[in-house]
Length: 232
Ligand SMILES: [Zn+2]
Ligand SMILES: [Zn+2]
Image (cartoon, rainbow, N blue to C red; front, side):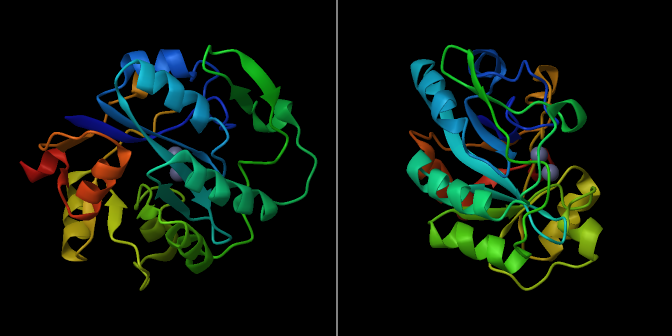
């Protein structure tokens, strides 16, 4: 089974407005995770559409720390994700949001109808440091992962090192990064970080076991059963 564990919806200010549930599910591999910037608000609508299409959705979020590092969090249900999402909102800057300047952030329902405009500045860093971010994810039984380690906002790109944190998964985008992660005993995964429909599944990971739901998938993930193309 193929999985793409990092896809943005129309709620992310930098993502295309066509990133709505029924368009994404059409192009999705068997397993996909929606990881919007600092918010889980659109995931419930995606969950309904993925269930209807017999595909597995992993509730996710991409949190930006005060050091400008992106950390992904994966959850086995949407309730846990939403608890984390609410905490993250409290740590966003209190600034007026100008959609024309920063990009539109749209909440969407399961029929792809836009329901409201999000006014929290989701594209800004929280005031949480990476330790805090990882702690919040773990406290809600989530799995933290370093996003795009060696690109802008990646842990290695920003810090030059992997700090000593309880994070065991690293998103890699090249064979070099795959080997860097391996050397640090991190489990490499590879995802598209799609912001446009045509990017979905451009990069993906593979799971050879049959998976029934998000909970089962995440237990495989943490046990290193999710592979990248460089594992074969
Ligand atoms: Zn990112
Ligand atoms: Zn992203």
